[in-house]
Image 1 (cartoon, rainbow, N blue to C red):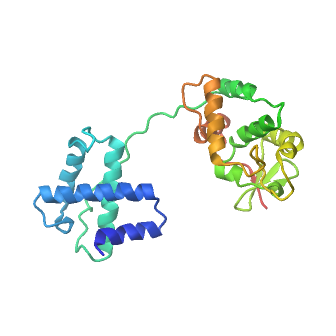
Image 2: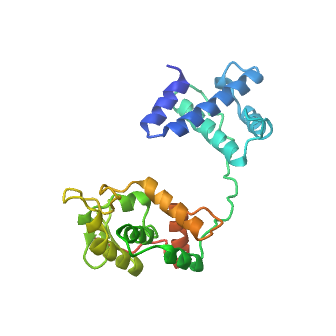
Image 3: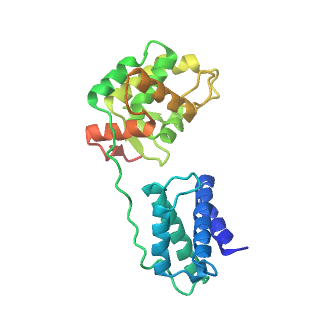
Length: 258
């Protein structure tokens, strides 16, 4: 097994996704191509000066699409190559670490496009709370202002505690905000019973077929809701959560000991 494949296996064991593995293979191939262009025997002969030239090559040499790499892509490539070479040095494939002078900085990120309080009010008005599915969607909307999608959809009925509290996967208990408490209560009383097909399903949020709701439905719900409200930005779970936290200045969620 080559060092490159051993590295990829190591990263797989660490939990790297297939998408990231594919990208890493691409950047290692770029490095190999650079070594050939520099007439090096391989990446084992790289020096800090070579890596500086590799950086410039990524900045100014078009990729397979014929376009220059974006700044984020260049940084991704350098991070992948640096991680590999440092791993190779630690495993004894390299006597010296050629990345010792390679300083990486993350490119400036664009300002986040967050929702305003007025936009939140408009979104809430569009939620139909007169039907079981509408009550479910209203409860989802409010909970996604405090929790991530996996945290919300992974909850069971038993996780709903008295006093507007919700047990989390960690065993901690989240004190829900008033809007979320009211919306969840309406769903439990006049929404979920109409969706449930039997007592065997323990999931808190159910689909129209009475099964545990999937993340795709949440994405569709927010996307459709944002379009109806005329939002310029794409409404997704992350933007919703970030907007609520920014508006409430609530980066620390109020939690009670289990």
